[in-house]
Image 1 (tube, rainbow, N blue to C red):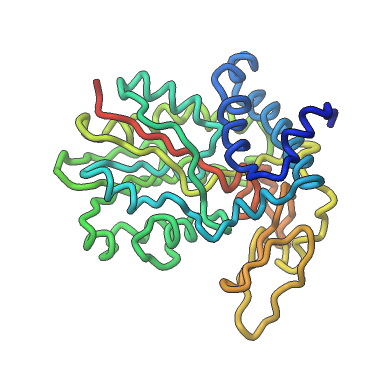
Image 2 (tube, rainbow, N blue to C red):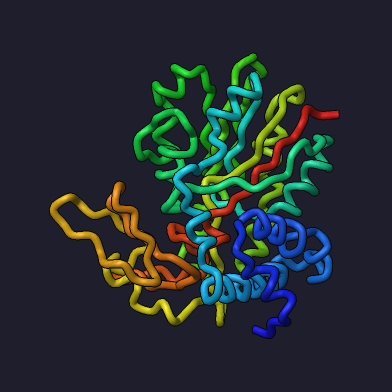
Length: 328
């Protein structure tokens, strides 16, 4: 990575880095302008953007790795879904499982085509580790245990809070959503379910993700009542591990995790020792891969997917937080 002195000075000043990183990701990396510079080819946009993020993370890890502490701050998450519902009466939330800041230009384009004004375009956070189950427990804000999204269909805690819940599994699935004066939570397993496929082994796979977002948006956001505000967000992002986009200095950091991106340790089992490639949460007895490391699960047929989540990196932890107004 070629770094000019002024650039290095900006990012290594002794000040909070996360606000500047969020702005950089939204204003310089994952933008419609850069997408057009890539000739509107999603896979090229993905690869070139990931190189930028990889270079930035390499710089910060070497010279200013305090941003990891900001990503894991005890005060997070700053925003929960429950908080949003409390301050936005009868609003709707659409969780697009596994969507990331990369898709923000697509979301903004779809919002314009849906005639919904953008009231806020910001950055949210996953749980740590960056998984769906931990997001449901920690970031929905309803005091739920570790659950999968399908288990929320008949959940009494959501029902007790007056939340109507719709769960979508496939992109072409459609449901009728009644226009009743109640807060509504919609959860769609796209695109995360696709990334779990072992065929997700190239950047070209991302072209299909980008194109299928139109149908998913139509079946979720556009199916919601026109008079409601809608928050479009995600439970976690993901990191793309193309050639040269994994920090080989972290090789074998996952050995205490048995090849996983995170692991929970029972009380009778000692936690791993402190090392550069691991984030340790003593209270939760958790250890999480820290940084851009493409680990290979220890399994008979490990997935070859280049799209991963569950660890601690910018693109896994930072998520879209897009508030749309009623249709105009």
